Image (cartoon, rainbow, N blue to C red; front, side, top):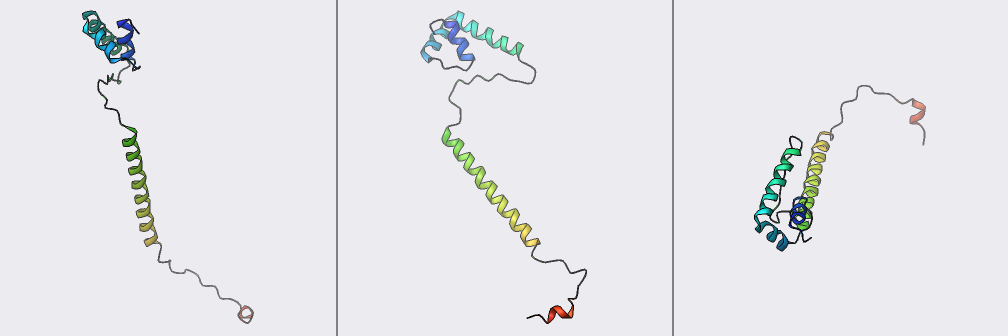
Length: 112
């Protein structure tokens, strides 16, 4: 991309852009004016309730952080499930009293 307008447009579209080309495009007054115009245009055409976020730094989560968060979520779910199972099993230790007792016939009691 050698056209400064293409570089700025690609940057706003979150496409990969050479930082040197972006700096060159924004160093010109026309490039800065175009950036402001495109941001204003995006603000006008976006539906209500959505926001435009332009990431200038590398604040995205790294794969290692995602893996750590996923592992923490799995551990939390396992511990929570174990504790819930222990609580339920403690309540299920005692059987309710019998409401009806059935006597077996005497012939059954004599079987070997």
